[in-house]
Length: 143
Image (tube, rainbow, N blue to C red; front, side, top):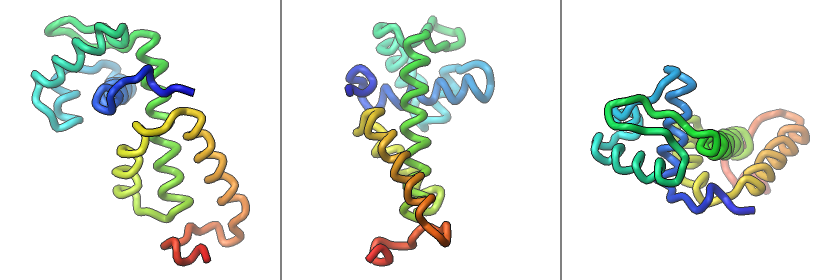
């Protein structure tokens, strides 16, 4: 299964950020995207033009950014991979929240949806079979 139509990790981050901003604020603006990703506004503008050319966002200068139906589908898949990985890293591996988030951001771009779902199934299996319902603190605790 292919992941996000061969988008770069940066493009995936932009799509995910637009989705999160739309969910939080109902709209996404260049300024908000730049702030969320800690980048300059011209970088956001360039990325949005590239995403628009791929029919993933609707964007005109000085207006709100909206995901196209195709962009929404991809952004939701990217966000789902991220959330699955955060859950795996925190619950199955016992990583703290911030570190689990950081690791998920790195790995989410390298796996496809099928692999992410397998991580999710593994996390659920570990939780179901862990009598103490606590994640190991380190790999050495696994045996």
